[in-house]
Length: 261
Image: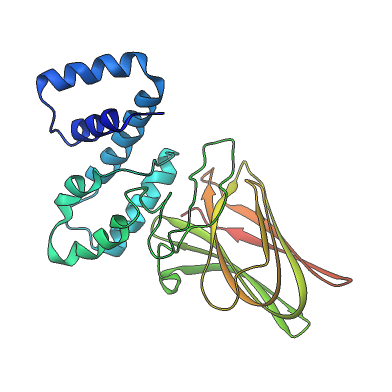
C-alpha cells in the first residue's frame, strides 16, 4: 500500500510542483518501494497520453483519442487520484468544460477505470487477460459506422449483431428483443481481434448475464437489451467473429467482418 503522503508527493511531482529536495526524497522512495514506483509509472503514462492530444480537440473527439491511446498503450489506468485537474488545464477553453464533469466525480481513472455517467468500472486489459465488469458508453453510437450485420428471428422478435467502427473505437453491438431466453455467443480469433469490455446502452433491460474473455463473449437475455462490446484489433489484416444465437432448441449461426479501426 502507498501512504497518502507518498501518493500526494507523486501527484505533485507529475504536475511539476515539487522542489529539488522533494524530488530527491521521491527518487529515494521510488528506488525501494515497488508499489510507489508502479503508481508513479502509471500516472506518468496517462499524463503523457493526455498531453499528446491536440489542444483544439473537441470533447467528443478528445474522449475518442484518450480511449484509443489507452488501448493502444495497454495501460492499466489507476483510480483514486487528484492530479487530473492541473493536467487537464490545457483543455480549459469553455467548449471543453464538459470533459471535466466526465473526469471529475470519480477521479481520473479516466474513461477506463471510473467512466462518466454510471460510475461503472472497467479494467483495461494487458495482453494476456480480459476486462471484467462494465464501462459507461464513451461515444454516441449513432456516430459509429456499421461494417457488417447479422440478424435472425427469435421468439417474440429478433437478435441483431453489428460490427461497428468510429474514430479510435471498434465494437460489436448486440440488440435483442425476445420473449424467450436467448444465449448469444461471439467467438473471436484472439490473434486477430480481442474483446476488452462491454457496456449496456440503456435501451431496454440490463443483460441477465454476460461472460467476457479475450476470445469469447457470451450474453444471456430475455426481453429487450442493447449492448456495446468493445473490441481491440491485434493485426492490420481483416478479422472475423462468429455469432451463435441459441433460442430454445434452435441454434442459428453467422460470421461477421471485424473492422480494424
